[in-house]
Length: 106
Image (tube, rainbow, N blue to C red; front, side, top):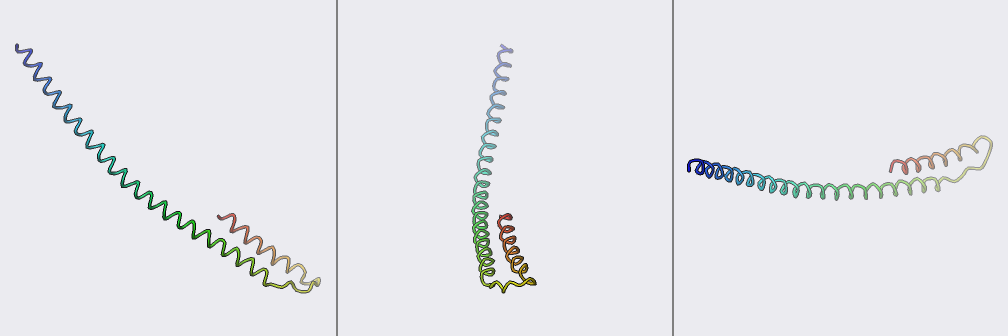
């Protein structure tokens, strides 16, 4: 009977350890779930903020592009003479390059 009593005691000890481990696992899962919920909210806020920033940058890009085109349109081409014929073309090239640079950066 003593082996039976020791077997019952060992079984009780194992059962207690299993319950303790089960409690730890459940607590760990709850903590992970709480952390995930907090991270999810933070990530959603970050995504929203980045989306707003992207919209602002798109509007700024469109504004700058329109401003550059308007600036070029306001410049009336001077009468072509050998001395200034290339300067007007160069001004147009600069605006085109600025517009392309803005496009490449976005």
